[in-house]
Length: 330
Image (tube, rainbow, N blue to C red; front, side, top):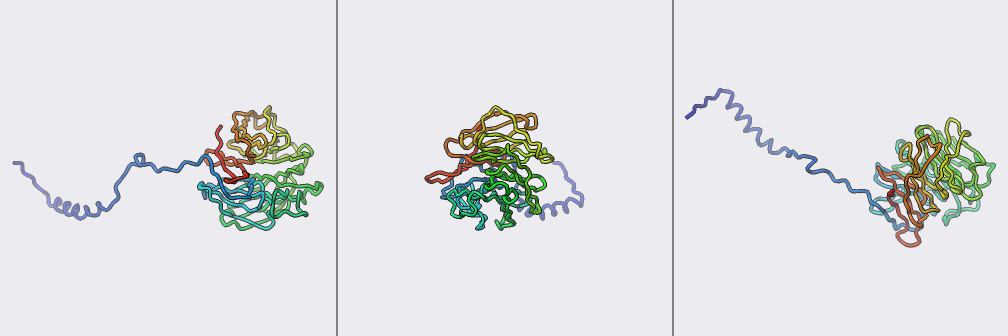
């Protein structure tokens, strides 16, 4: 029978283990995350919203709060939409006759809204502002409190009619706003100073002119003109040197724009019921279509990015559900 000899330190070690075992039993067990992955709910293909009489024109995805922001052409207020279709008012002010384009400047925690009055069933329309209003309202993105309200149309007083439509924001926080009734693009800096960035007859239209606008990280704007589907490249260092983007794709009815990367632009052509995916390899001197998404006859207005997906807004339906937010597939 073998003999075992213990040194004096062994009993002490055993006593220590006896004391530690109950504590070790309290520790959580280890698991392999690959065996039990956390499941993130998939983003829905379509969100239908029963809220009536809003006619939302603009949309932005708020990643921080996992919600969409929507404007209201009929009521003026800005609201939020969750994946469960619930609508909640976020911001309002009596001067918001119709809110059109939105821009969520997340880094500065603010929401910018283009404000107009085209008497589109608005409950706040007024003879003094009908077809004459172009303004920007800025709200705190968390609380919805109004930070500023800036008149733009007075900066282009040579034109009697105005309609502030869409907004882009550059890296410095300057905002650029299109006017669909006057051939101008406005600039609003962080200090609240409003100026006309560009005024040119090429941007005019007898119906509906400039519409969607995006900021390109290389220092220029891409702007859509609804009436003829033109796309313009406007360098911020020399706005007067703007040029029309050459393309063979018919983009008539162009409305909202979304730059998904430096070479890819999504264009919502509302009157065509189509979202076009446009690409450029020469810094938007030219562009070609690389895909399309048919929405049907729902008068889509604009589009926003959510992660790797893009969602288009169907603003008005006569019967419930009243409007919808739909994932595009090319």
